[in-house]
Image (cartoon, rainbow, N blue to C red; front, side, top):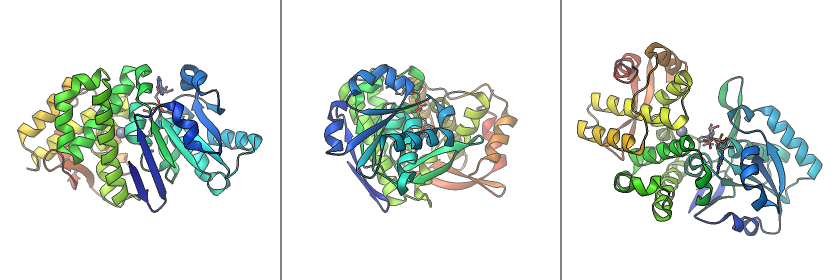
Length: 340
Ligand SMILES: NC(=O)c1ccc[n+]([C@@H]2O[C@H](COP(=O)([O-])OP(=O)(O)OC[C@H]3O[C@@H](n4cnc5c(N)ncnc54)[C@H](O)[C@@H]3O)[C@@H](O)[C@H]2O)c1
Ligand SMILES: [Zn+2]
């Protein structure tokens, strides 16, 4: 699969082995940015690479980490004849892509995403960056990685909550753009959950292909790309207030957006029930113990806000996302049935 945009082209290799990474780098010298966890688990298999190790998790996503990477680039003598490879979850990919796309005004980079979320979401689309003073992804670039090598074997060591975060994004991809993917997950969720090779490959490939399609039509997020935020406007607020993993919050956010879609006459109750049933079957939550007013406050502080209305991604049927400006009051009413 290939993503072609104004800022570059990315090739996606789904189901390939990490052992093929060297051949994708060609004759170039490869420098791998990796976090301490992934290095601990997989370092032995990657001994051919020069490593730059960073701390694990969201707290590492800072300009300070990027500065340390630049300093290591200087020590190693990294230039345009090198290729930087981010090997890890979304945090590593976002940081490695940002460091590579700004060092010497941009050196080539590729990704080996090792979490399900990074494989189906974070490594696709060229958004690279770091956080600043609690604002997520405030600093960044849009520049495409040369390739993404997706080795599904990495998923075997992933903690359950990380797996769930990726799964929520796959359901989201089906819900916004592809009824047949949604149906596929309905039918095969048990095989997907137990990481059966064929079913997980199909689910991951379909989700990637959906994101590629959306990004190629609107790389700079003028409109269409916003549809990937389905479940995220309310989800991000719930994630912040209730301090739960991203995918769990997005799941609840999708239910809230689904209920709003029903209230606007866009979605049938039976379709909302299908979404609710699927999320529950895979083990994702649909409600949360949280203070509704705190969640509302977090939503209205969100950067997607426009006047008293908030741009929300709704569903005009499963597989067809639309963007509507919704009154804060309507969101508040919906949250009555979501925040317990
Ligand atoms: N650029 C984008 O378009 C985009 C899209 C979505 C999310 N993101 C970003 O992605 C980040 C979240 O990514 P994430 O959920 O992958 O989190 P993460 O990168 O923090 O990884 C989660 C945890 O799993 C560990 N891990 C990674 N691979 C593993 C493996 N194979 N086995 C065991 N443990 C492993 C990591 O060390 C970490 O502790 C956020 O910062 C978010 O902003 C970016
Ligand atoms: Zn997300």
